[in-house]
Figure 1 (spheres, rainbow, N blue to C red):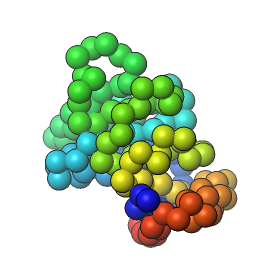
Figure 2: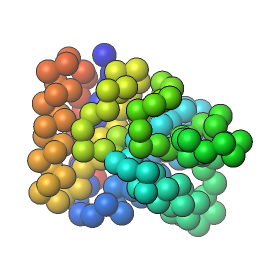
Figure 3: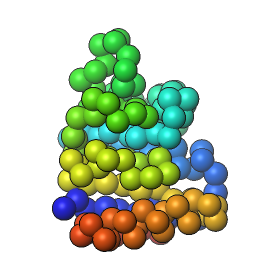
Figure 4: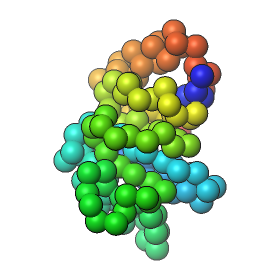
Length: 142
């Protein structure tokens, strides 16, 4: 069973979730972990790809976008939106509304929740689903 950490942000909006995803990915990479960031859509994945270059001055986070054949396929951090070809890594950062079917292959999962009511409702559903599957759950209020 995976360890699932819910990070509950005081602020609202998708940008807050994306910036936190970048920070978590950078921290995991610095601890020598591999990461898969699962976005809702291809457009969201591309926004995250851009944000990883700019979210913090002086940051360098080696990453790639799933489905591109640009030499980044072996990057420690991969970003994608589909279920095809997702290789298990040390950490899954889930930004989708539902739990992806491939989540079971990851030892750690990070769920990012904003203060928006819709985000909180969806996270409660995911929390209950993870609990029912027997995962270790942790909540961090930021």
